[in-house]
Picture 1 (tube, rainbow, N blue to C red):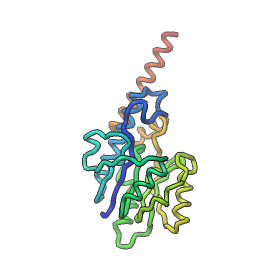
Picture 2 (picture 1 turned 120 degrees about the vertical axis):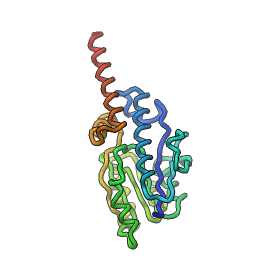
Picture 3 (picture 1 turned 45 degrees about the vertical axis):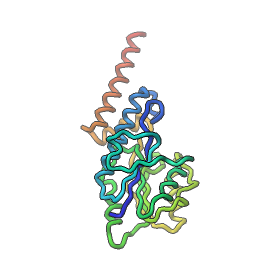
Picture 4 (picture 1 turned 30 degrees about the horizontal axis):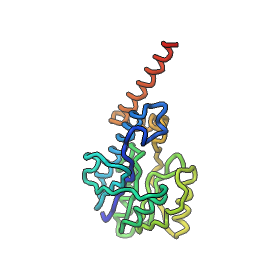
Length: 222
C-alpha cells in the first residue's frame, strides 16, 4: 500500500515516561512497561503493508526499536502541534499511532487497510477512539496539519473535537475499534488481561507481585 505509518513515541527513561504509573510502581517498572508497550506497537507496525514507517521520537530509540523504521525527532510545541508537523512532513496516505496501546493488533486496523487498499476508498480519514476520550490512531489520505493544529489534547473531549474538525473540513471519517490507553496502573492491569501470556502481561503481573510484597512487608514492620 501507498501508506506511511508514523509511531509517535518517547524514550523510555525512568522518571521521564509514564509518570502516572509511579506511584504505585517504581519509576523503573513504569519505564519498563512503557518500553514493552512501545516495542509491541512497533512490532505490529512492522507487520502492516506500509510503504514507509516512521518512528517520531523524543529522545533516542534502542537499536531493536529502530529496525525497519526511519527515525525522526519530534517537532517542538504541544501534542497537537507535534502531530500536525508529522502531517505537514508526509505526502500521501498517513496513519499516526501512539505508543500506549500494547494490545494493538493488525486486526484493529483491518477496516482502514481494507478501505484504503480498494480502488474507491469510502473514507478520507480514520480515527481510533480511546476509552479516556482521546484517540489512539488518526489516519488521513491527504495529510494536512491544519486538520489537527489547535485541537485541545489530553482531555476527555479530544476525540470528539478531532472528529468535529474532520467533519467540518468535509471529510468522511471511519471509526476503528475503541482501545484503552495505558495511562495508569489500572489501565495496565486491564490491558494485560486482554493479552494474556505475553511479555507485557507477564511484566504487569511481576510488577503487581512486587507491589503486593511491599505491602506485606510494610504490614510486617507495623
